[in-house]
Image 1 (cartoon, rainbow, N blue to C red):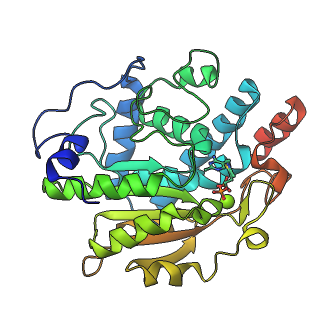
Image 2: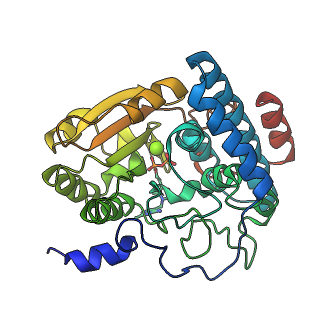
Length: 320
Ligand SMILES: Cc1ncc(C[n+]2csc(CCOP(=O)(O)OP(=O)(O)O)c2C)c(N)n1
Ligand SMILES: [Mg+2]
């Protein structure tokens, strides 16, 4: 079925350049202006930095985010530690050097859209958003507490900077395709980036969306796959082997590149290179689940295991 252009345009917020749509949030997290100023200084610095300086700044940013992920999950007593640590460098690169967003004005109509389709890794995203100043990092200590806007899975109605509520796997890319179509209809230059899990790609809805994006030549759409090789309780290769994964995306009309998903410069190049001939792009980011903490790395049980006090201490020491 083809939704009407009016429906799609309304969903992404009116014609290009018009005011933001009416407030859609029911809980209040306010911008942190000190954090915003610091993040803007970083963006400004990286806009002129050479590659080694860019890499060093993003590594430092990611290290801080990983430490906060560990302390937030330990404090809350729940979370998806392994996947948060595998996706951290992807989110750090995107928010640290790529996405055109304004944490002081999160509903700016021409902002780039980031959809974390693997919504179980909300802590990595919340921490990244707080680092940009969408809300205060102090709020992270409320993660998953009763009445906190920072739920286990992100809600667009509760948290500034969250574009789409996710958690049920297989929804982010279909929504992202709709968002990208809507933005293109109103001639916005904004791009849409969807971050997916690799196990998540076993959901057929992704491939319907991929087919549509290829057909519609959505060159403003980028999918980044956190290819850590693990899903809940098993390796992806043992469950439903995805390979040859890049070829599958290409067969659906996409460009596909594979990079080291912990190499910020490789990620940066992969997400910023101009798209060829009206094609969406898939970046397959090879990652390690639990990255940065030796006893969590590539261990299936750390999908949603929570560190005890001693494990948290050791993890923070390794991430120093
Ligand atoms: C539709 C759906 N089925 C099952 C789940 C439960 N679930 C949460 S995470 C997960 C595994 C996801 O694996 P992957 O996409 O590889 O994520 P990552 O390895 O990055 O954590 C599953 C099955 C879910 N959230 N949604
Ligand atoms: Mg995985």
